[in-house]
Image 1: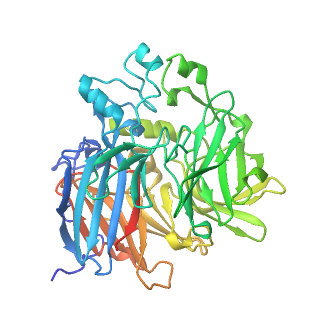
Image 2: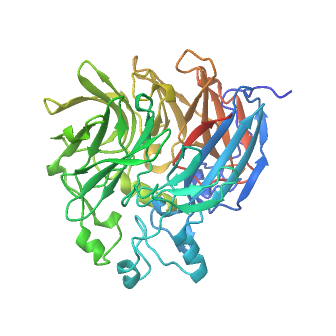
Image 3: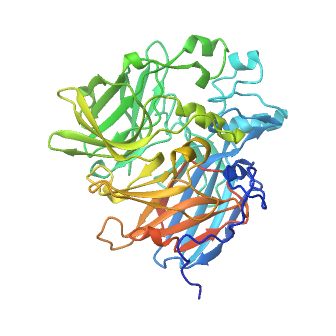
Length: 494
């Protein structure tokens, strides 16, 4: 019988070069090895288990991220543009099986048929001026997140429709508008509200007015459009958050130059401008009465991701990773090159909103650079105690390193615990899975897809939610690397 791992143990701790090759004295930028193209696709195969998986862990972890970093010899100019691949790891009876496949989008299929790049993306211009003008909206990279809804597996990307996949083998079905409901875009960040037994999501639609389309996806029955609300300007919204009764949006003072974009000048990202003088628009939408939404403007800031929200004493409490401006976009742009420029300045903060007064106050919760915050699923929309996220070990790492720690933060006490998986180990967004019958909020496992630079392979690190500092209980190893992923989700086994 295998035994639990020692604290912070790594199966291969040899130092690596910037490209991830064994033998160098410096492990800095070793994460760049995870930005190579996915070496092969495969169906479900047994994974090598190191340590001991909890017998109760039964279900599937899905992940999504850019996995093809170049296009017929032309490297993508932004991390967000890589063609997506879905990975899945099934756990049952102390064993695990893994699969990974590239999403065969219509755009990727067309490019492969033509044998050359045809489309631009978020931060990559189309290959020619004519293709920029007539690219029919670009390619759906399907590379950001996943969701399971009514037994359907959907790959999500905020610049288009969701893409259907077959859960049994991850093969691509194709784009869907969910029965004619999705008008233009469907974000990569749906949120589930237990009280309403439904997922809610949104899409930003550009035109004469910039509109926020809000969608409802119930546990049973058809999807529907809840509302379409005019925004203050042509902005970009990546995520939102929900309480039991409200949907909350922070619309940052980004402004898209649509005319330049339509004229084929630059790509989407290059046509975004930070306008701090316009402030951040806060939009609070009652789920039961969306037409009674409230809007007000506060000091400018940017956010990629929210953690959780709830209602308390007439206020809306929102935990969010807050940035002073949009400069993180440049850091993310340079990730594929391995030579990051700028710094990730996002920190977990608590916002208390008073919609009636149009005011908000912020309090720091965790002052280290962090991203991809999550809470236990049973705590979404209600008060929580613990938040999980990927974090940087230092300010220097926030400039030059990928996230290299997992953090567990007690938002009540302010205590933060960071977990290093091992030398040259780079974790992704941590996903909490509750132990059946658990009462305590952190009684379960935390799953993080991690890249190991020394072996150039990836694995799922399984942490004890109550004692994460003891190191992984187990690791489920692929025999290849999976390019760094953005988001994922857990589906309980039947």
